[in-house]
Length: 311
Ligand SMILES: [Fe+2]
Ligand SMILES: [Fe+2]
Picture 1 (tube, helix red, strand yellow):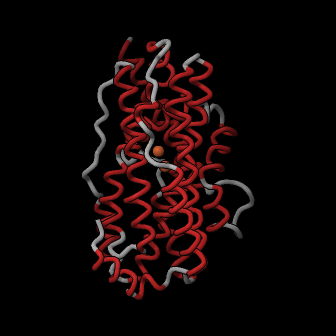
Picture 2 (tube, rainbow, N blue to C red):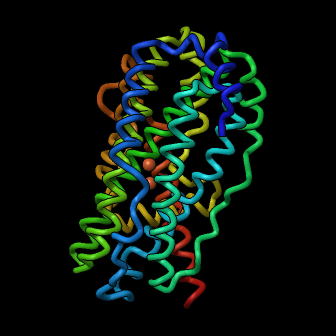
């Protein structure tokens, strides 16, 4: 919670003044609209009727489990943001604490309940550990020029995350309908999916505004850091990387290299246009494609090991 003192301090800081006024007013308008039109999903409207729990668990269990964890881990993401951006623009803070966090947490609670009904254990999200890298960046971010770089990385991660979520929920929605799971598709996945584009749009507006304000050395550093640190959403460990690969496979977004590249392109579309406009045509950045390929390979390797162990 921000005290009046804190907002006064933020507004008057030199850092805050660097937010471009046009971007600032678009963001305020956007957050007002999202907050107004998208309160957290009402649990009373959720229908957990499952036609065939065994079939649903088998086909989409890993994807539902993964998404439940990622949605619940937003609580840790807010701790990370507090470390990473010691003096965030007030509109960022408002977005992630008042709008984004409550919406995403509710997504997680609903998906977690669904997966428990399918026979999976309760999700055990990591809501505490903030990585050393983020703490270090946060420390360096006491200089406004560095904090702008961290903030740019936050927006880029946000865009890739939200696009990944929309694509995953699109595939889940169609997949559930195909299985005859009408209730879950229309009262769980559809309402969740509807809230993700508003998150994406926030980061898109913020990223476009900030990128144009960065000095060439800052843009260079953003490209370098992004190239070295990109990871698929929720895939912080080797195990989670393999889990992400399994999710991609179950959602049919990585059947062949063409599908995988197309998935990468969609995740990183705005990022490619902003950061790499002059470098590469329409393809996704190589670090995105490679990260997805590694996840898919890790998942296939694990599958292979599991089936050999079962023999
Ligand atoms: Fe969500
Ligand atoms: Fe979201």
